[in-house]
Length: 329
Image 1: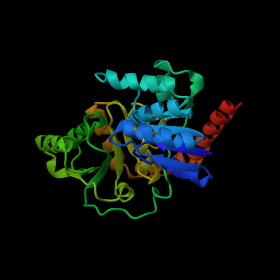
Image 2: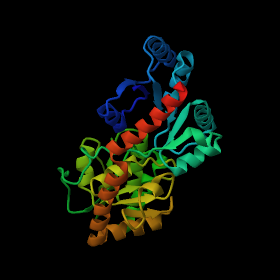
Image 3: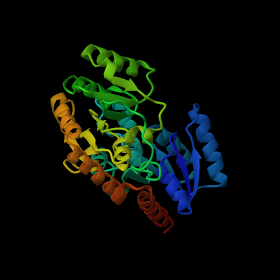
Image 4: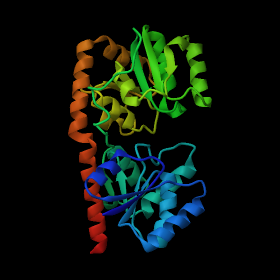
């Protein structure tokens, strides 16, 4: 099967699909949308793929125009972001609704996202749930760990955008003495500077550090716990990468995270924006060695049982095969 993947970020699933023998072409979204669409249409008219898979809303808009011009079926996915529920971002929700309804098929990363898509008017028969994948050859417990100080270490992954809730973790550090927070992000940019200023106001500036240069698996393996405190729009990939490294996760119960982190088994779930509950959960995990180790072992088992890239690639290929064969019939 020949698949064109439109998007600016490569996913390990595409590597898994290539290992299964599928022909994968990557098409980034250029700065000039019209030029990107025209280039895809020209290529697909002479050498059409069996389908195009668009990752994200911006890629979906490009792929939708190009697929309509060339007759190639479009499969749309939105990653781990929360769809259809962005207060104050009505325009983006409109685009998501358009893409969900216009695409031949939609991949959801979990039941929560499927429910949101149904609420946007996407037909149930057009939605398949395929979870986010983890490359367990890169993320596993046995590799090198980044150097660390004598403090307990929390690691958070991703740019410090307000919706990620990292400011809540910084605030919680006031009641977690001897604990540092390392963010896998650059210290540059307005969001990072605001977070650093908030840490100074809270009196924990010396225990908050940005480290965008260390390899993420190494940084995760150095952590006592990973924290995913999203306020909304939670992407499960950070939690899954930590779990694959044998690191327990403390996360907020938003989006697909409750389907990813099993409360009391692989980590702890807390309500979003509840700093007291977040601090209590982190303290429990950080100070209870046996619990932390049990969470870590269960996390690795869960990732290998449900989220390994080989399994998710098989599930994705099955959905694509059904779509292509049904259209041919």
